[in-house]
Length: 340
Ligand code: CP3
Image 1: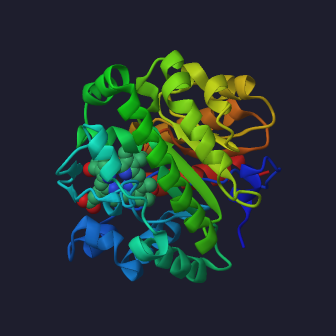
Image 2: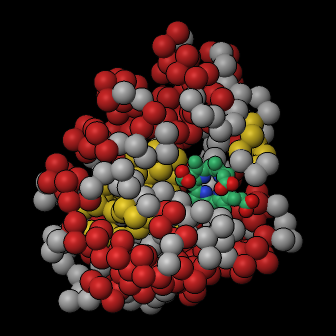
């Protein structure tokens, strides 16, 4: 079993830097498109055999050191009572706007309401046995609530932020409910066999540090505290958190996910030796020549220096137009250049 990824999450020394890519299962891979051409994205998420197949594709094609469950952060929100579509971005027919909307949300029974997610994890653990660990994941309460309130993606999340400032009781009731759902969802993933958990807070960085402390930190902290994670490291990725890493650390994760707006070495100085980091190559570097990709991989490795507890990754998800051979090259560079 290749345990480099889990060892690095716990800050233990490893023979070479483990690497995986956020959104590594997806549209840049022709192998994914072949499976995806037969069904919708949601149908794929709800078909355990197919979801497991596309999770394993990047392990075999890119030779990454971890697999990630194939699903979406919004999968468990649908059974809360919100009809969901992907067009291709997420779309909720009836966004949350009032206290009555929040009160109508239910907390799903995970075994009954998202059995396909737990089944996919079980299949993956069997098929990955002896190969690489499996990462489960969920959205942070704030990022999930952003989509639930806006109904879709947004440039400025103004509807969400207006609710935060003008109807705080609705905002806090929603965050409370989403946090409880998330806790049960991620614990169900751990119980089913997920060996690490990544929490994606893609939009946490749209708030000022002061607002992050007031509106987001209490909920993510409560979520992480409520996870059965004695043996399951938690990776906390807040995009745009470069200027508030000390604050985000207080949420309690084991690994800090870093985007590319922060120097990895400086981030490590701020975070200290008791927290591992994951990141942080600019995803668009994968459009560059092999020579430049190698140079940038070396730069990120150099910023880390010889500190244990680094998992190489992109600073955000891989883009659908990236040539797969460049992603393969990136992984190969990380392994070759970091070999002890
Ligand atoms: O990392 C992996 O390979 C696992 C699968 C995964 C998906 N979404 C599959 C997906 C993961 C970890 C996610 C997380 C996710 N989903 C996030 C957080 C990470 C991030 O990128 O910030 C967010 C914000 C979402 C919500 C979401 N889902 C959006 C905004 C979109 C559309 C954007 C786009 O890429 O077009 C999706 C759809 C989605 N999720 C696809 C995939 C493979 C594309 C669907 C398709 O095949 O048509």
